[in-house]
Image (cartoon, rainbow, N blue to C red; front, side, top):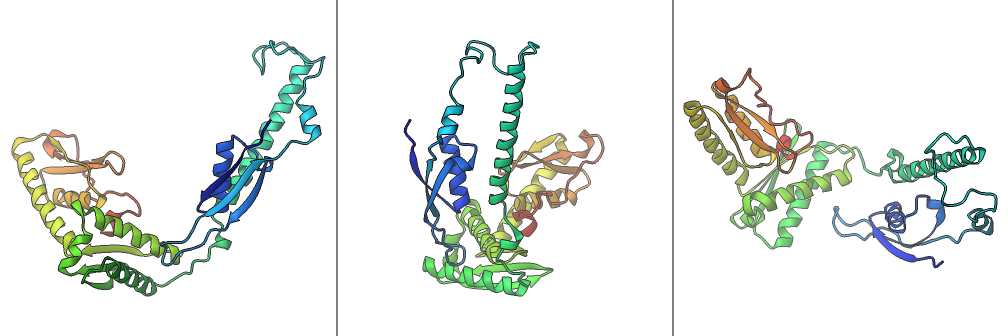
Length: 303
């Protein structure tokens, strides 16, 4: 039997070993010989860096382990049923059941140890408990560096309102950072949050706008929502809107909340979550969820 040797790359050594276990079909980490070829390195401001690289192969079983796998003459033939299919009451089958149960328990314990190695340990968390002012500086430095990397002429302005970091990137050239329907802007928003979480153990909420896009989008959606509300008020029924971000859904909910004849609620799972507008005369009770979609720590809460 040949023992395959593979190399695996991942963010951490533990994740690389876990991926190797899955590829080799091994449940017990003790069955592997692991050589760390490259330790992971952190990049600057959450960017760059390098992954861990490990070389993994199965350990050769000891002679005792190999002998244990050989069939003894007095054992039941292979054609007999395995496991607990019937009530034969044979002592050999009972012993096998106990042995299999013991192996299963050991496998679960080994998996538990492997999972515990991959779980973040607060003692190993090197992030600081940064003030919101310090986090604002990190956001401003990162966004300024991003604008410079793109070679654009723009200005980054930050401030703090109600424990929320407000970041505005201003300048005509910075419209290149918006993208179709704000897709690039959303990506920059998530990337900036990731940088904050890299340095702060408890990151603050962030609201990001680029070239005034968020305000223009909010105004356009409000007009659109009011038109739909007028239509539903006159014709009744309900309308299912296209999937939107939580920030856009909140605008629709706010518009519906200002109306006495229309209610709103969300359905679906992100990123395909959408808003349904319904005439209150066509539903039993008021099921309005005009609270901005309780999507947790999402963009809607921070927009």
